[in-house]
Figure 1 (cartoon, rainbow, N blue to C red):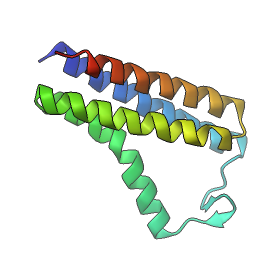
Figure 2 (spheres, rainbow, N blue to C red):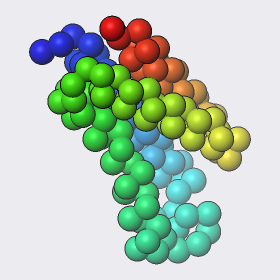
Figure 3 (cartoon, rainbow, N blue to C red):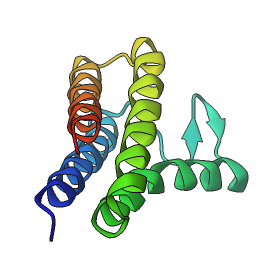
Figure 4 (tube, rainbow, N blue to C red):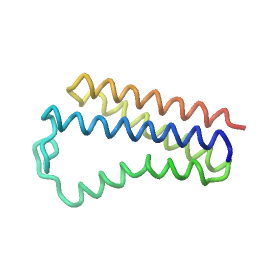
Length: 121
């Protein structure tokens, strides 16, 4: 298997684990109340939207291994660019220092993904 495919896939694993760690820490610190988001009950539609959003990095773990090089390169650039911007926009909304740190880590991972995919020839 192509070494770049494995590298990109492993970066997506690291991104997903970083997001998961943030969620776990928000529960542990009491910043996240089960069944609520920003004080409002989580509806089925909201839960579905969150599931769709968070399955994207998981999907990229698999797609990075399966897609042909040209499509793979652009899928990684586009998806990592989306997450980089998404996290930059969301960064001010998080109170915890650990959240800001983990978002910065994920932004670095996304930047590294873009760099690797861009230079993949």
